[in-house]
Length: 77
Length: 133
Image 1 (cartoon, rainbow over the protein chains, first blue to last red):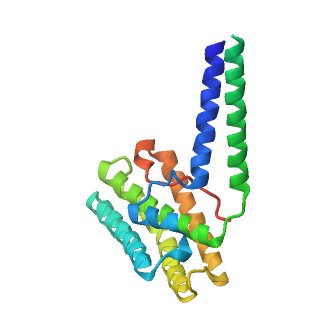
Image 2 (image 1 turned 60 degrees about the vertical axis):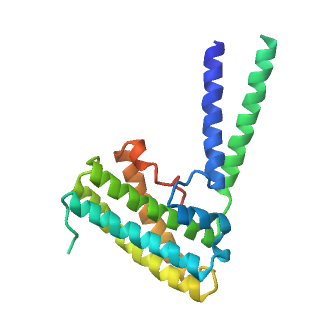
Image 3 (image 1 turned 30 degrees about the horizontal axis):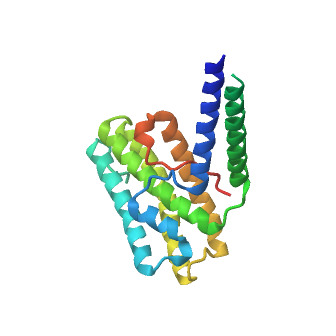
C-alpha cells in the first residue's frame, strides 16, 4: 500500500518537474549557439549573434539533407 | 506511519502546486518573439533528428526525405522572418506573424510524427512541443 502510494507520488512529481522544466525552457536540447542566445532573449541579440543562429540553422538544414542523401534518398527535384 | 503519511501529504501538495504552475504557464500567452525562439529551436531539433535517424536507419531514407521536404516551407518562412526582424530592430512585424504561426504548425506536425515513430533516444534533440498560437 505504502509502496503504491510512494510510486504514485514519485510519478506525479516527475511529471510536475518535467512541466516546470518545459516552462522555463531548460529542457530544450538544441545546438549550443541557439540555446545560449535563447537565454538572452531575442531583443538583446546582436547582428553577429543572429548571423551565428542563421548559420547554425542553415548548416543543420544542409547537413540533414546530406545525411539523408547518403542514406539513399536523393534531394527532391 | 503517521510521519510517513505527513511526508506523502507534503510531497503531494508540492506536486499539485508544481503541476498547477505548469498548467498556468502553458496557458499564459507567449509573445511572437518567444514563438520565434521556439521555432528556431524546433527547426534545429527536427533537422538534427532527421539526419541522425536517416543515418542510423531508424527512419527509412525516403521517409526522412519526405519530412525534410515538408520542412522547406517553414525553412523559407524563417528566412523571411529573420530578414524582417533585423530591419525592424528585433521585433516580429505583424505581417510576419502568420508566417511564423504556419512555420511552427508544420514543424510541430513533423516533430509529433517523429516522436511517434522514433525511439526516445533518437528524438532527444526535439524540444517539448508547444502550440503555435
